[in-house]
Length: 345
Image (cartoon, rainbow, N blue to C red):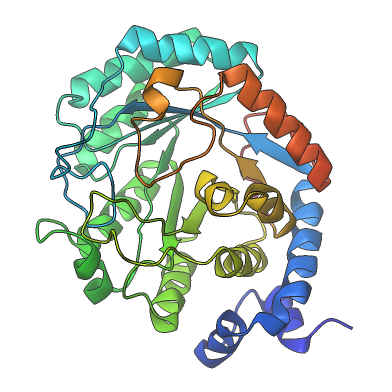
């Protein structure tokens, strides 16, 4: 018989702070959480898994976030930028492999001003009119987000990282704030994007209370996508000696998020697959329904090092797709060539 606390979460999509504290801190609910989360994802999405073709087009970043290997202070990073034509070539290859969503991800690189971003987005939109275009390029002014949307972008990923202001300040430089990050997310929603938020699991100074604050913020925001993954350290950051986040806690939170947000698009992240050999498969079994294989040129993949030991850096796109297809099938699901729009009840 399923635990009553898990049943309550499934039915109400919510718990009290004390109940969340119990279910987050204790591993004794994990089996029931996983079972309930898989049932809910199948009720809403069946056994399908959506592909997102990830194009990491620049590893320059003006920010100095304390956890990220792309931080501006990392003088050892081998920096690169992809041209518009190189990005379009990635899309071309991805389209032939069945991808119908492209995710352009990069550091906050001033070289890619609004004009350049709009040119790239418009070119992708013109060449691949049936595809979704997702941007993941950080904090911008509302006017910039509007321009990208008008150029043809329809999704935007911006992890809030932590909803607790004091915790946010311990992870970021003084030039950044949790309030501005949240402002960006609300602006994106108001413009009409499908919006993705999310947080790191096990980041330095994180507590159960900060995780509950993340869940509460997501309840307010009601995003279309939620991306979470374990914190993974990088040698060229101030957090080089911090312990990595927990795969088990990440999987537990994936199931909790699926029960709270039955409709949400929930990735099984590369970070989860990096910390655990079968992490992405277990993520799917815990309620996730999206995977984001890499379409970037192989030469660029090792250079986009947010954290260390990232998987799939040496594979061609076709290899990556074929490998994922087998892994997803072995986990009990199937990849579809579909834009994978959110299915809100």
